[in-house]
Amino acid sequence: MIFVGSGDFVRQGLQQRDTIIRCTDLKPDATMLDVGSGIGRLAVAMTGYLTAEGRFEGFDVVKKGVDWCQKHITRRYPNFVFTHIDLKNDLYNLSTETAARDFVFPYTHDRFDVVTLFSVFSHMIPDDIDHYLSEIRRVLKPGGRCVATFFILDDVALKHIAEGRTGEFNFPYRRAGYAYLDEKVKEANVAYEKDFLLSMIARNGLLCDALEPGLWSDNTRSTDQFQDLVVLRKP
Image (cartoon, rainbow, N blue to C red):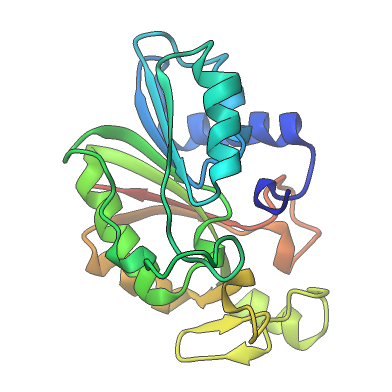
């Protein structure tokens, strides 16, 4: 199933969990939102960390993934809740015309301690990301954090692309501030210039606390994260 992503399901889920705890100081009784929850890779890992006082919410555009999570996770852990959202995406869902930029997250203001997006923004175009960042700020509690991954075109990435060191991830279709890997399926993979991305983040009232480069642009780095990791905070 394409929406699961590559790699070992359990191992990567545990890695994501540990990364979130390290970057956000997530407590076992926290409330968290996983945007693009898939078939619960992160959720499964979090069942062993969040207590009954905590809460895990997830939503995804792929109904089969949400159905799986409801059947296999929510039945055992009722504080883990999953919602299907019917939004258009060139890679995952062509059955609707509803755009992500028009979607209001179905949660109240200041609700979550942590919001996560693993391999979500790497499949979204700028207008949609801009809107999602505003929604993330809205649903985060003051001081709450967001952990998200991107393909970021910084100086190292651009140099290694030019040298042919990034394999298939060369993002040849350049636009103002971002680039596509596939011009026909634009949301298959999208990369963002660092300054362009930081400008979007700041415009939506979020602070960038950390940026950790991933393996995609330099496979000699000592990290388990393929994409670049960004940690944001609501003031």
